[in-house]
Length: 321
Image (tube, rainbow, N blue to C red; front, side, top):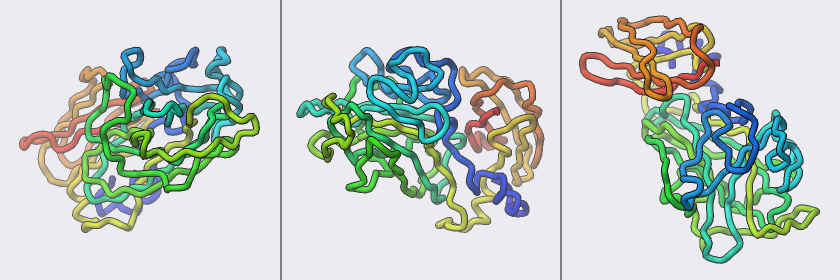
């Protein structure tokens, strides 16, 4: 976010106008083509909050580059579906028709930067119910967390209250992609997003799947594509000038060759850049502004810390394209 003196530039290139805070929201970037079910982590930045093989769910990654029919696109064992865009999508189990099973799968992703308190954000994703599933549901939601959720040792609904819920009656379609969207006013510091069905079976509404093939698997299984979260400009619930002056700025994000850092407290500030294993890559001291050469960095996500004599003033993530 740029300071108040450069807000007009922010409206065209900064977080405040149209930047997607969900990295790889279209699932097009991957570390390797999927070869089997349960490989959502092959899509860059996406992860499974549960432990596969220890009672946890196993969300899937489908890509046209796959050599295995199990996870190929557009045809695979769960049906036929062209991605909403590109060549790939994720997949999660929303509901199992066995009464009382409460089996769920979730997908999680770190946000490009933490959410800012009192700012309003708009969320969108497109979902589709698989052809072979016997049921559809409107029970799909989004939870924002300030810490990573990992190591959950079961496949039950995660014990959180999602901040964005699909509209009741907006049942996912097996033929077309269904838009699921909503707005959220941040508490501040939310850094992760989780998608799935957080409801128990008793609270999950289902209807028969409308696929022409009359799906036979006793599940409601959803494909997910084009996930986005963007700041809604001009609707701050607190004074916009104060917000821009309080929070430091890193731009552009995603970055290619040069990362600009701005902070207007006129104090000596230090930025430290880490890789995802917490290895320190760079440490630089500046006052007000600095520019970091990122040309040598490999593509991917990096973590940063900004701090001054009073301690840490911001932690976040930056994407190198």
